[in-house]
Length: 165
Image (cartoon, rainbow, N blue to C red; front, top):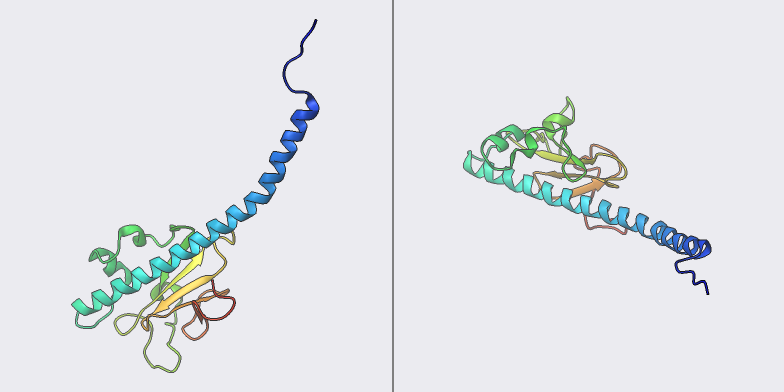
């Protein structure tokens, strides 16, 4: 009497098809979770950068400093000394690196550049890394938008509206 053990080709194909279906369902959810985690990390990093800037100003006659001074003084770590390196899928900029014309706070004559003000922005390295651009200014409000750079009056405050992350 001959006894065959093992799986038939049909059984193996069914198992393979089930694995492919589960993968097709799980991968988009995994990518969305990663994108959300990157966005949360970017918001936390911007809060840390703004807090470091306020601490710097408190110790330096209420004058804000450029990003390089914050790194040199140990207010933030040296990951920010190279603005071309992504941190958790986001590229971070200070107001000096966004453009040649300093951004303005709407309704104010103060520029967002040191020593009178500051602005930090975060832009996703690619659409797979994050959905929104974020920014924080001397007023301490985190803002987001689909365009870069997010201006002080242009972006919506994080946490307001139905589309907030």
